[in-house]
Image (tube, rainbow, N blue to C red; front, top):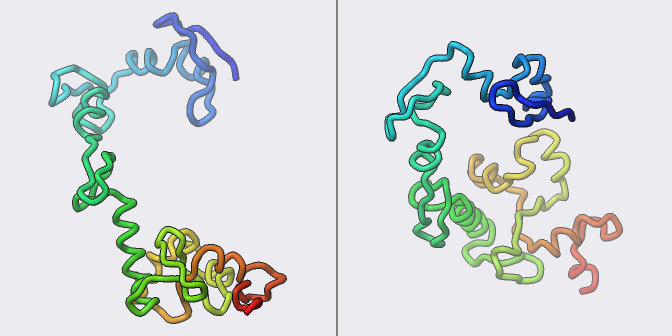
Length: 186
């Protein structure tokens, strides 16, 4: 990747933009910041600080955008300060609530591994009872990383159970033929 000196600000700049375009030729020997200043782009006044800036679709300058729009808030459930808060909760807390709802349904009230009895919710996962997870992901490609969301959207379909990660991985080993190691040695 080449580096050149900008004709406008005299600072060194990389030769390639974000999409692989050559900046030196495209921007007439200037970095993208200096080149954008030469264009007849509409200017707006920042509604927070009054600075004049290029209209990038926001009515804030970049400093006010970071300070006022991307505000970090505290999650009411876990207390972490995060950027995106919906309904007072961060994404990980909302995901945990959804998982608990699904696990409670498939465990008939008491959340635990259906094989070994593990109760730590961070260790639990949903499992395809008939070992048809690969076929399910092939016909429903969007469910690969979000099986809990798929189950919720489809009103808790049959064919799933709650297992701990160890039992689920053990079941997936070819030598175990779709059975957990606990069932084999029992």
